Each structure stands twice: as structure tokens, then as C-alpha cells.
Image (cartoon, rainbow, N blue to C red; front, side, top):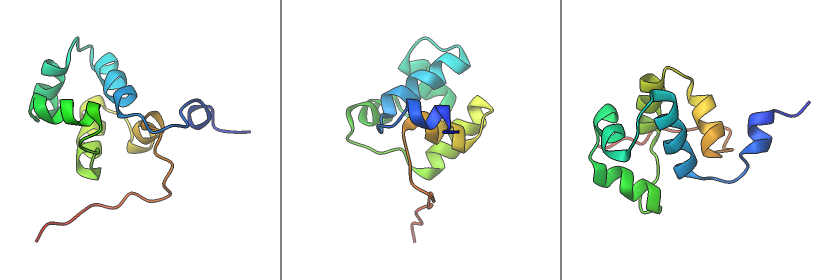
Length: 90
């Protein structure tokens, strides 16, 4: 049987993820979400417009804030990659 979350969200959509996070956390807007995630509102705006992708570390922080799994968030996001790699800055 096919995974219903995966079949429902087949297209990559960061807006869907941010909206789902706001719903799970009981938040009304991006300003409050940015405060909960400890990022600027500009970062969320860039994610919504597609100027910035959601990094693995951001996804990890979102999962911790929403008390859910990264796999669940990636399914909502529409991310179908088998592995998610952290980027390292030297």
C-alpha cells in the first residue's frame, strides 16, 4: 500500500510546510513563526518566495519545535530524496 502522505504531497512546496508548522504550533503569522524558529522574518519570506531553500539544519530545528519527525516534515514539504545531507562550512 502506498504511503498516503507521500502520495498527497508529490510536489516540493515550502509554503505548505510553513503553513503546516503554523497550524501545529497554533501560530497565526510568519512573524510569530520566525520568533519560534529563531530566524528573521526575511528568511521565512525568502523561503516562501523560493529565493532560499530549507536547509537540513533548519528542517531539524523545525522538527524539534513542532515535536515531530524530519521524515514527516519532508513528506509535507514534498522532498523525495532518499538522503538529506548537512552542509558544512569551514
